[in-house]
Image 1 (cartoon, rainbow, N blue to C red):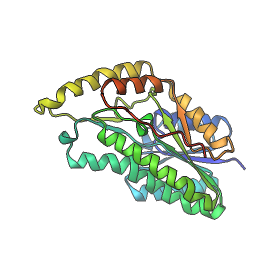
Image 2 (image 1 turned 180 degrees about the vertical axis):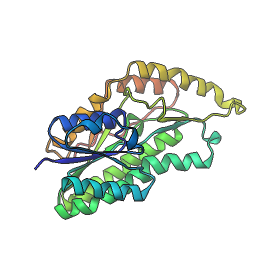
Image 3 (image 1 turned 45 degrees about the vertical axis):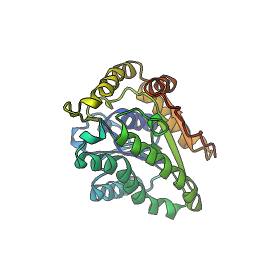
Length: 269
């Protein structure tokens, strides 16, 4: 019987690349996305179920998990990949946007995880892979919301790493650097208020830095391969990095601050 992975945010980028990567290696794939009716690629592949899941809609989460179990009989891996980045001065963000960032990147991740855990507990096995970011270990200015969510993903994943040992479930964190996805496009929520002139200098520095990161980014297949390693290496390693731009991103952040930057150690449990 083939193993099965459920992937959130599988319509593009890391999620889609991972769906292809696992399917090509004989896995069943439950590829979830908010608008599955627009998907024309993954729907043509054997052993792939494309279904709707919006991490902010609990009913859609339940329906997707049930559909996956009905199709393949079990779930072995959950990849929490869905998310986006909100950048800009905190003062400029409406509370609605603040809540949406945390509802998607943190609360949604927890909701999907909670929906899969009863199945993992029943079978006494499973692996959860949470997509964090280099931005879960260090920060850019203007990234209060995005980095706040990724630091949260780091913390909750580490706690679950220990908690879920009791039911035979592993938790892994994958921390991509700059990856060639649509992060700077439809997955990027930039909010600014030019009347807040005090912030505009740092805003312009941020906007000037993004094109460089995008042009030198690694392809999403690099992350898919790291996810494969995390799932199949047979270890309890918690954190995995992915992408070649980590050092450059770090230097960019250092350039913007006079205070020392610190990073969490890579916990190899």
